[in-house]
Length: 489
Figure 1 (cartoon, one colour):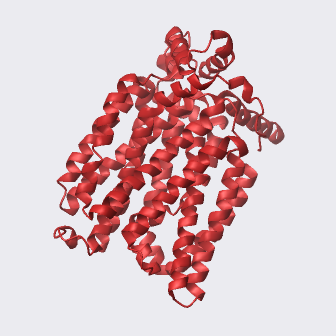
Figure 2 (cartoon, one colour):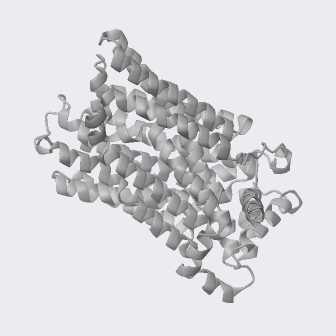
Figure 3 (tube, rainbow, N blue to C red):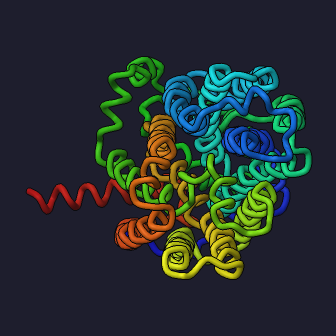
């Protein structure tokens, strides 16, 4: 399945103006993604506040049981599939920009409700709304970023999107570590959707979406702006490739076909075709192993995890350092992804996390508890967070926006995001039960062994997509599917 890294970088060398234009267009997506990181870490802050000795104004939260905590920590992952599927159904009709405006409004609404939440039931409701936002905006930003970036910058700029995601984690955890007040920490985050409201006015619609709506001239002008005002001669090849890619939806120059292709039954029929189904199957498996090695099941209980390591460092600050490692890892991704490719980056970082998880489990199980062993476990956890955010976590989200053909791109990104969050919900909700069954440190060993299985699968199945146009990536899966069918016959 491997595609070698394409060396045709000069074909997409539009210059610094193009880079700045694309970054400006993605600024809305970046801030929305930062708010998603905040939303996903907020339940961890709330659960951690229950046991934080520094929090003196926590009477209502102190009544939350362990079962209620597990729901507060996991219900956020139950509703993103709803948001993802909803996004897959509406963004073809409304466009990415309109969907981003809706997402910004719901972000502000969730903050307002959260500030008055003081009972478990209200926390369930608001985390459900936050979960819907997470799924909705994930699907929209993945497809939007994949469509507006040129092949040379797509991996890098999508990695920046992941950087803002981890920056959201860091923002809320640092705020709580300093203030020891989770509601005040949430209040600080209102600045992000407020700033984003202004940026939404300059956010263009995707040229591919405009092409799919038979607005070819508008798509061409938007495309040229996104390439920094490049001459038609310099960008005509990529634009023609974009036309070819979008023409597979059978929409361009055919208004009568648009109604047919927009039907729900047609969409699902297209989804089960091999060029869509094969990448979907691969991404579902990658998503599972990504969750295992990225520490996702631990996220709502991070303060408890760090308390178990028994280091002198307060768990709130440990959580902040852990998120800092995530941000630093993503910075490295931005630097190296275009040089070594997504495949090598994924495999090398997976191997590193496997080693870290296995070592944490072995040290905890077989090394007598001491200050040194506690620090070793904590540092290994930090290192694992660094490598996961440097490689396989951001690459997975990039693949969501790259692997699907145009006719099922939005639906594919939406359903893939939904599968990610369903996996998150199940692994988070039942993590405590699993830990009770096998033991805290055995959990790390089991995750490490599962990671080895995932490494072998990805080694044989994951193609290289760096510096490939979306049309080339889609054509690769179509060729593979055709070869398989020929061999079977």
